[in-house]
Length: 127
Image (cartoon, rainbow, N blue to C red; front, side, top):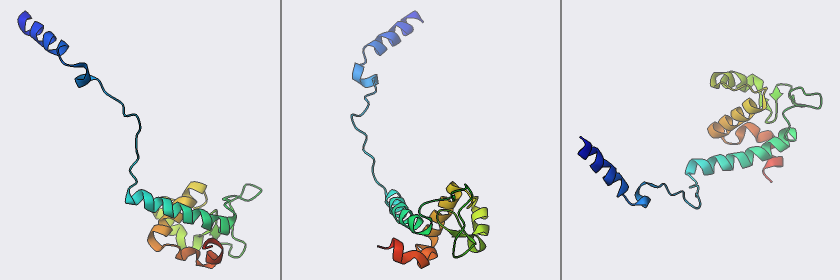
């Protein structure tokens, strides 16, 4: 038994250092996938839409959720229309009255319908 233990220790000590030492890469390169590129493009467009719809704000000066000036059912940063989209938003677990939920629903609408939900502000954000 001692001979087997001694042989195992000797074998471990004879393995070259490079074989068991982890070498961290000098630089990690992120490979941009098609999905990453699509999300990046969506975010660029959604940023422009938000500026046109709400000046990029989820809340008004008093801290209340921004409600549309033209349509009182338009909510938040992306002016998501609660009459049309609140049910779907809730099914998906998005609260359009929060900034995170408003963004998540805007992204979902963009994925499904492109920019058509924001057709009325297109002259502003398509420049």
